[in-house]
Image 1 (cartoon, rainbow, N blue to C red):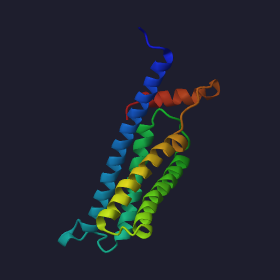
Image 2 (image 1 turned 90 degrees about the vertical axis):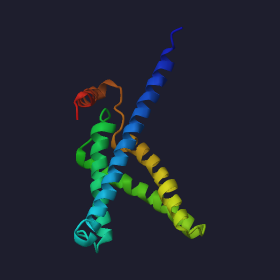
Image 3 (image 1 turned 30 degrees about the vertical axis):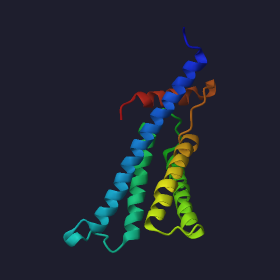
Image 4 (image 1 turned 120 degrees about the vertical axis):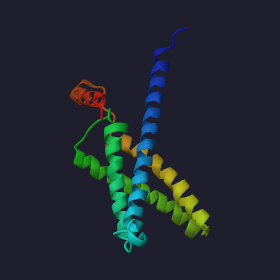
Length: 175
């Protein structure tokens, strides 16, 4: 018995969503490797275990996060969400950084709540609140906000046909 159109459409929508989630996860893990790797290179890769920014951990982290965020932006723009709408790259990039700042505040907020309000101050509790709960909630926020604001879906109305054609052409072009 053939499936109704609505069932096929729902199956395709979920398939597309899961594909985006998987790509988003791969891009995020790649950016995490860049962040951690670059941070450690700046701090510890050099003679006697002292890198070029050994005595500047905050500056090292700011640089590593900025580079990792740029890697994440490019990966999401040209791979994860390549078949979605395009705005100007500058606008997207600024919005991407802003949304990442909000996501970071989610993780910091979880840490603040558990550490200062709940009094759970062990290294284990801090890591669970910041790097499991906070990072998890921040990641969900990032995925939703990137899809909604940075790389929005292209409307199906005729007025946006040129955008749709451009996105389809970009999606078929290998990276």
